[in-house]
Length: 478
Image 1 (cartoon, one colour):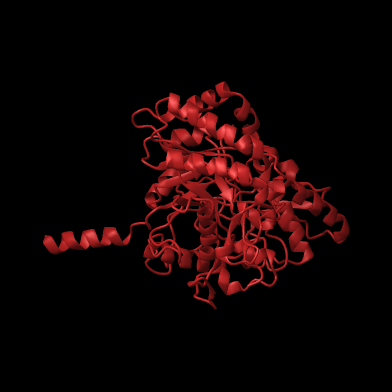
Image 2 (cartoon, rainbow, N blue to C red; image 1 turned 180 degrees about the vertical axis):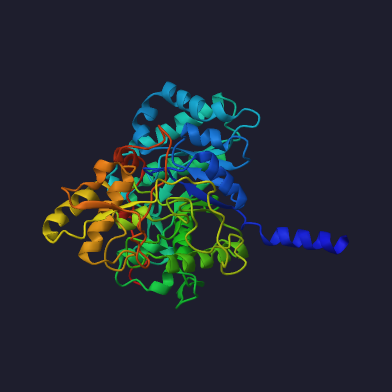
């Protein structure tokens, strides 16, 4: 019995996630999966921490009793009113936090106020309303008797700090937000709350043609040296740039949490499953080692971004925005991952079980159509109303025109829940029951939803999502 017991313990230990690992659960999807099924999937995979961008009631109810550590979010669009109306802040806390703190409820650890509110591209829209909102939410938490346990945090984009020389030691906070940043930093220290920052090595590569590709990964590429420290990847360099910025204003010991980090799988030449797997393999191995960065040793608390592909996200930053998920739109894992970080992933994560699909049928361009110029007009319309971000050179659907039109027709048809009217296209569309997928290009069959589950409106997605296209890219001159 003893050897078997020892083996069992060793096996359990080998499958543990890296310490401090969580995942962002965004829901900007036209056909979201049932939250109860998603929570089951998270637990099966050992993922016990989630970061939300709001506090959707269905999601919160599904999380009740799960034991998952939850960070709920407040969208930027709510900051204006929350900053001026304390009663509104108290109401928000009552409805979205304390409502779920009953025995067997949701284990809420923090409230994320805003999402990258100081992003440069916002031109200061939330600079004046962020800190008053933070104070009002924290006050409401304190008055509810949960402020000692549940902390207010602010997920910042990495563009709140900069380095004129592209070296970490020259890191500093942007001058145009220094006053407001200092208010937040004093608050975080007083409340013993962490500084939450989103770091995206992919964007450094995407935004700069001269950026060395190996520096975006964890392959120990050509290192750079800075004041005795050595950097072989942009993740470490970016993190330590923040540490230098904090040190220079007197907050060197502030805890840091990586609120978002990940790699997209489509929508750009650098976006595919192979490179995403390479990035995650390196990241997870690094996190498992608990080596930290050159300036801060030890484990790093990290939330991967993100859980699923989301077809309603804004593509202003780039078409890749709808492809950040480690799972596809239907809850299937995209590539092998080892969340324990012990070796390169060779096994798939467990997907969402019991997913129901629409009928196994597709809408394509009728083979009798000869005038493709007219059909292309229909393609443009379909893509304006559905997700065609997989179409294009160096993407999963690098197709000839006829097949591109078929792909667009099907995306529109599936998005409209296979409504017969959604496969007309001026008489050029036709339904087929033979899968038209080709190579890496998958013509999807959409998830079937019950009444009331469908999320409508891109405005919701735009209001919650902070456009990453305008993020300052670090170390572009390396």
